[in-house]
Structures are given as structure tokens and as C-alpha cells.
Image 1 (cartoon, rainbow, N blue to C red):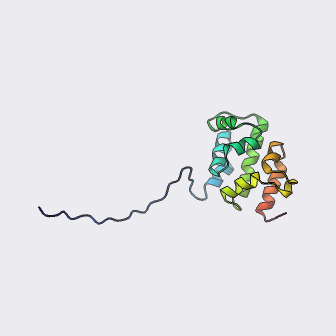
Image 2 (cartoon, helix red, strand yellow; image 1 turned 135 degrees about the vertical axis):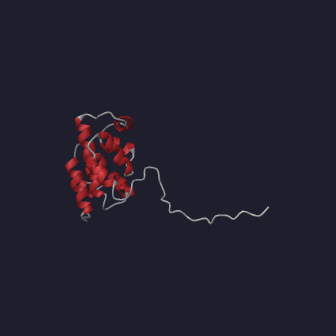
Image 3 (cartoon, one colour; image 1 turned 120 degrees about the vertical axis):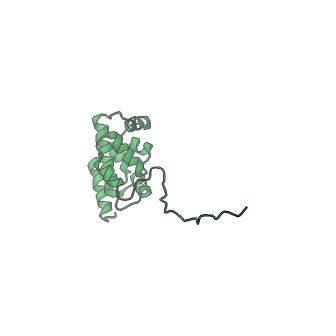
Length: 142
């Protein structure tokens, strides 16, 4: 029996899919326009912000953050902190990587008198943290 001719193998262009991957240029827009708590939590997690960090910044526990992710709504003060965290992350998005943003939120900050941004957010100092984020994004280093 004669041997069958094999088809030449051609490489198809592939695009690597990663868990939670969002096409470049769209993740910030989605987070920036997120209004519902569910959308905000998902957007923050796409930026590498862990559930425990979201919980600390909003003065709640990780279980509450998970319940927001699946559809429940936080009460007003916690929603305001969640929205402020969204605004801080979007302000830093052009200046830092996702890992850098997560580190910035946890690091002591001279602009905040040596306090960590997540602590200041939890205490209701949303304006100060947002100012610190904008200052960092604009290149003001203290």
C-alpha cells in the first residue's frame, strides 16, 4: 500500500488566554465606568486587588466583598469607600502595573503622613487617598 501524503502543518496564529485576562485598553474603561458594587469588585480583582484588600479598604470582611461580587449591595458608607477605591485604582492605572497598584495601596505613604492608603480609605479619608494617587500619577514623589 502506498504511503499517504501528509498535509503540511501550518501554524495558526494563537492568542494566549489567561484566567481573568482582559484585552489591553479595556480593563481600565470597564472599571472606570463600573457603578454597581458587583462590577466594581470584579473590575478591582481584574486589576489584581485581592478580596482581603477590598475588605480592608471598605471596613468590612472578605465574605461581604464576595457577596457584593455575586449581587448583593453594600450599605452607603461601604459603597462610597468601594467607589473611592475604584477611583484610586483607575487614577494609578496608567502609572503602575497591577502588582504595583496593589503594593501602593498597602505601602506606607508620606503623602498620607506615613499611613497606608487602605487604612485611610477605611477611616473615610477618600479625598486624601485620591489626592495621593493623583500626585503619584503626576510624578510627585515625597
